[in-house]
Length: 58
Image (cartoon, rainbow, N blue to C red; front, side):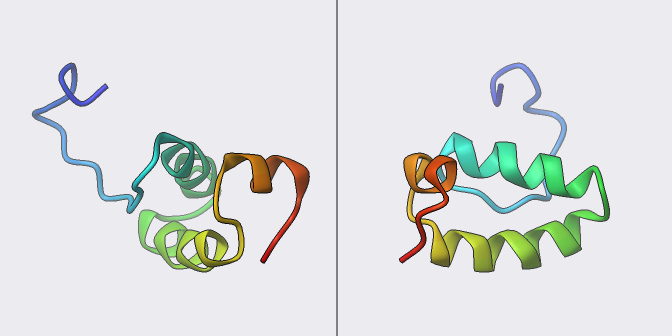
């Protein structure tokens, strides 16, 4: 998506694409700033997409 929307900055913090999916979902319910705070903690507990899908934290 970055090549298609290079002129529009993304204010959400993410590394792998699954993190962006989660951040966008959370930002839809609040603000980008709040989504970044919540997802930062979520990413610490769930290391990858499989862990998120299975609900398996550290």
